[in-house]
Image (tube, rainbow, N blue to C red):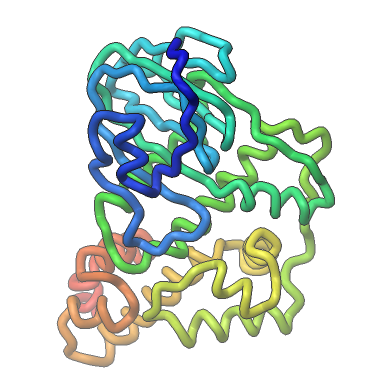
Length: 299
């Protein structure tokens, strides 16, 4: 293990990435406007990093298709690892001194969460002093699914992903607090749904801005609520998440335009808030069981 002075890095800065890794990221969420979560996709050769600490919590989501032997140190404690075969996740909390090496070129995704996000959720549950605990390579299908969903969003690089990323970031934060923190009591479970006035206010706000790149932050701020509190109670009220509600409303608008106008499908996609025709078609098939073009033909 290196005796050089440990570094503190911020991977949102490319020059910081290159202090630790030999190649820059393939893709990142830099230009997508996501709140509280930052994502990078990497393909890195066999390497040994210097000792360093992150300014944010980092989750490594390794490719399930490549088996890699590695070693990792947390605050000087070394452990051998093997990624692949289900062991695809490692967790590096913010400010924890960390070093790693791996034996072959491998693809992986890095998820970075703001420390304040976890603290805020814990604070809303009247729990103070919660810390995330380091985790060597391990299986966690939930984190794996979130990592792959966010990686797919990076690859699409499309307008309208903020609400999706917000929803995943909140779900990920809750999962981390429940499973990988020093939390000694359950998080408070909100129940009963949103008060009717707040629910109507949220629905009106969303419906007035369906074509915008909505975010949970903006909707929760409009209701003068926290993101976590709003998200949980909204889903209890309608049995779907804010993201699912927005997509359904856009699909309903698209159906109306398909029935009542001769607009091209691409034009309808843009008019109801999708980035392009392909994005509309994917979501339309999920919710309506057919494509927009076939829906129109069947009228």
